[in-house]
Image (tube, helix red, strand yellow):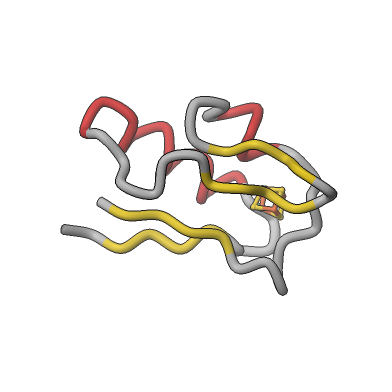
Length: 63
Ligand code: SF4
């Protein structure tokens, strides 16, 4: 699984970093992906973060 954040959609509101701080960090009011190649043990938390994102800025690519 790969993940990225659409910086145009991201408002820097923070739920992604609260749900999965190992992968998302808010820097300069935008969520930054720390680990674009998500390890299997983090996949559930990344999906949860994507569901928690109010602007659907978190883009998951399966595989
Ligand atoms: S939850 Fe979504 S909009 Fe909010 S900081 Fe995270 S990626 Fe950006």
